[in-house]
Image 1 (cartoon, helix red, strand yellow):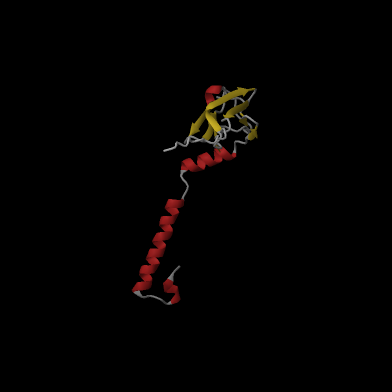
Image 2 (image 1 turned 120 degrees about the vertical axis):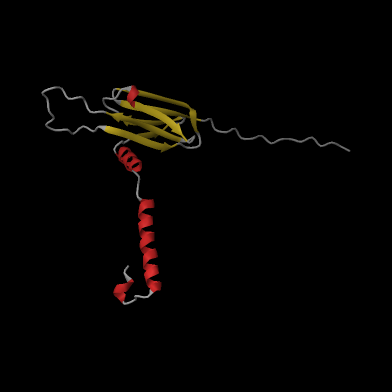
Length: 156
C-alpha cells in the first residue's frame, strides 16, 4: 500500500509503509517452499498407492515397474511414519540412438503414511514382485481388558 498516493506524506505514515513493506518481504521468504519440499511434494503426487486394512495387518501396494529391490527404500520415521522412496533412472542411451519421445516417468518417488497406533513397526515386510511393491505392517494385538483387582481387607 502506498500512503503517499493518498496524500499522507507524514513521517509516521512513511514509517508504517516501510514496516508493512518489510513484513511482506519477510513473510514471502519464510513461507516460500524449499526445493526439497517441492521435490518431495512432486514425488509424492506422482506415486499412487492402494492401502488395505485386514483384521491383522495394513497392506500398502505401489506400482514399481522396472525397479530392482536396491532402488527401493522402506523406512519407519518418527516411530509411526512409513516412508517408501526410491529413484527410477533413465536408461543409458546407446550410441547412434536418440529419443523421439520420452513418456515414461523417471526420477525420485516417495510416499509417506502416518501409521495408526495399533501398527507394529517391529513387524514390517516388503516384497516387490512383477513390478508391484507390497508392504505389510502387522497390527499389534488388542489390549487385554484389565481384570478387577481384589484387595484383601485385614481386620485390625
